[in-house]
Length: 168
Image (cartoon, rainbow, N blue to C red; front, side, top):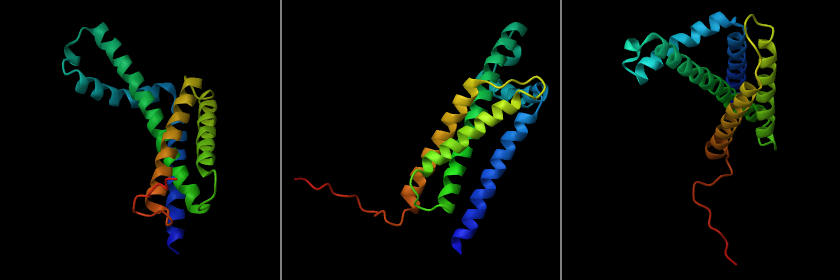
């Protein structure tokens, strides 16, 4: 019975993350820029306290660079969370099956492709191959963390004692 709630939580979390990614992708470019712009402005002021007193052209250039980094970090983190969640979700349903890491990575990478294709029909947005690659890397990092967590904390066959190598 314990596994039932784990399945529910991991499945719900995965679906929720996928929905959030999709909802962010539905934002027209103007709204998306506004959303990331609020965070980017705070980051710019945090990194460079004199930001508000910079000449306007320098401020704009700096803000645009910060916003690019913020947006790319958001891509990575969204898909890192998806990869972690997918890996844990698959483990809860298909315990100890081989190749679950690959399946989680492929599922997350497929969602990244679907997401970028979807953006091509949203006003002012464009699907970008570099974003798919960054998203896929985020998924991979999440899957690797999920796999490590499973092996470290959930594998009942793993001993807490270090294994000795048999020499000769």
